[in-house]
Image (cartoon, rainbow, N blue to C red; front, side):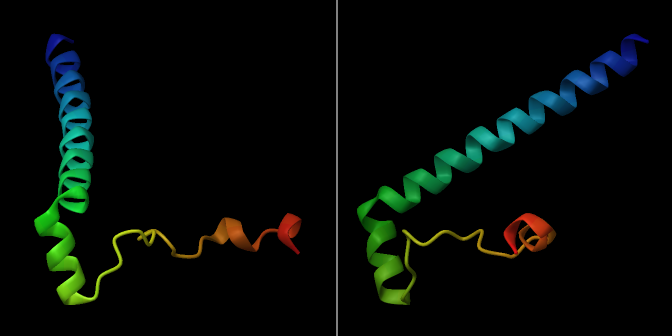
Length: 64
């Protein structure tokens, strides 16, 4: 039982750590001068949302 609790706690801790590092890296790169220069040279729009995929929820009866 202790091993199961240990594994669950480790998984949750790693998931939280992943989201913290991901948001720090995204915000750090997007707001830095060097990140802005690189994005400008490569034609990348940093202010555009990257999650623009359509979902099956977009096609339900309430939206018609």
